[in-house]
Picture: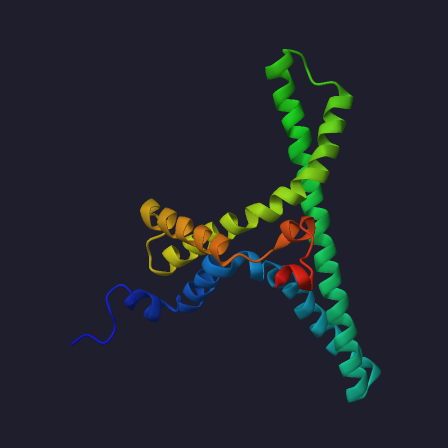
Length: 193
């Protein structure tokens, strides 16, 4: 009698179980845990820096206060960096769309004002699109991670099937994450009843 099924044997023996767990979390809840993933490096770095600063000052209260302040500052900085990175990506995609698309439509090179305007539209539009794309993107990441953990990362059927199931699951579980949560007004108590 076999205690471990054959498909799980490589996961347990190679130490890929944490990757499988992370992949399953990203498959089912990727858009919801995304914010935590963004701020985690800032919190961890802030705790480490706060511990060093607090020890230099001396005393356990100083260590606690320094760790708390530095962790909060790190979390805020990581959120700020993520917002700026999304806006810069939107500007880049917008300017690229004008640079590449204008010659196809008008058979002339894009004027500077067209590229600039398209970049500004990208800064405004892309963060909203990004909030919606988080669910399928994190589902694909989770699907590939699960497939990698069972040594089947080159199986398009497995990765694609898991990604589709994860995307459907995330939209079915609902929740307002990312930019989508900011565009819809919250329901009042009377509307919820």
